[in-house]
Image (cartoon, rainbow, N blue to C red; front, side):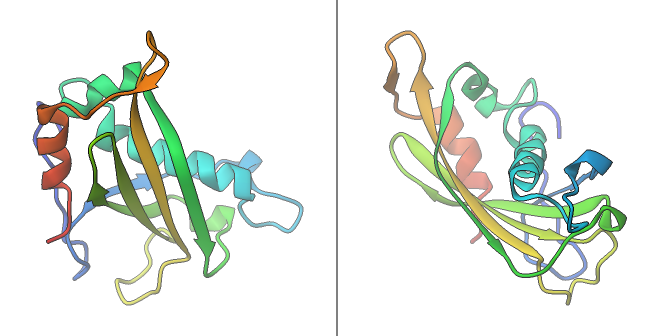
Length: 152
């Protein structure tokens, strides 16, 4: 994804969204040999970086100020180190004046499209002005890009 173009993927029959892979590190595992919850949250963060923050994207401005307002992670199955790289599909669910909600489906790497996601998650991300310590409205360019990422 370069120069603000949106990459949409239909992955093995799944609905459109931004598709990426995230490598699981050995340190992401817990004593029960599955990905630790705190580490899963970090892996979700790593998945959204190329979608939102790469140079040239209209939303790269959020690197200067964005906060996570809400986070939900629902575990429907275990993920282990052997499932790496994880298959992550993301899309925008909702856009409001100062924030948007990003949805995720996470599957083991190489899983068939018919495989239910092991993780279903969402993050509400709010634009934030560091200098004033207040939320700010999304810019039209940010909003336009995010609109392209909504499922329709």
